[in-house]
Image 1 (cartoon, rainbow, N blue to C red):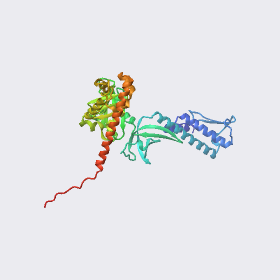
Image 2: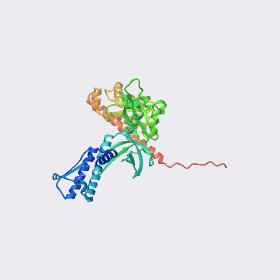
Image 3: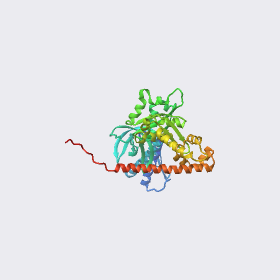
Image 4: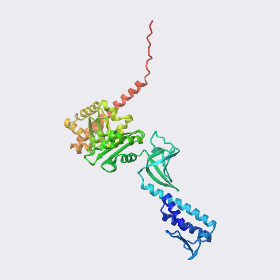
Length: 411
């Protein structure tokens, strides 16, 4: 019987992933509770129970006098059982919490279960369930009971007597882990994912860099005939993925991030953290993307605010600025060129930047800088008023009733 106890504890330890020593300690504590119940004792030191870890032999003492713990009767045994169940549950919670806290950020495969208020319950192993909130589910995806589902362990929390494992398929790191799985060069550190921007269910941009000149980062991620990227896209139910070549040059990175659109020119203003990108009229819709998605993801990927302009819009903006500032004494076309070199392309930019950067960067006196900014502010107000007036006229034109159509009839 003693050896049977050791085997039972070993089985519980494996099944519930609990350290066997913890189970021995729990069992000893439960037996002490049972003996105290039997003897009506409130003292903590008068009863000692120990179990031999090898043989399973149980020895118990009360006031240094040995007692037979097996002869205490049914009620103390029931007490021991209840205490043991509580302690095992507590140990299991601690074990689950410790295990999944270590695995936070890891991709796992679970089995989809039921939906509860829009949240998906996923069985992540034979003894643990995780919850995928609606906000962490990819829009448009539905999962059936028993379906195998890949997801990321987003967070692990203790909620009362339960461990809450939060799962995600929308987090950007979920895609990062998919790339590590599909592209060995990333797992080995030959290729790095430098930046990643995602709108789950729609589109993701991934900036990659190769630490080995012989390995093409983009080609390795795409795979032969697109095999690697196709596996990732299939896992994401068709979400589009753009592989972007990383560059330390902000201009090159911005141009790469806006692909498939071709960029004609980029003006970067460090003072405003803004990049003005010029694209041909035929490239405009590609650069902006559906509902502004392409430029929005590019901005998040690069860390720059990105404005997209056509050549006509860019030239008009520069001409307005040049006409405005060259009317000031002491300002010529060379000064305008210096403004453009700073990424300042419009009177609105001058107004936003202010006088101090002009003084420091362009080495002009403060009085002239303030004069330039004041003139730019007035011009900016004029442009804003004209824009507002045109918008109002467009609205009135749309609301104006149309004359009835006349139908020519032959006599």
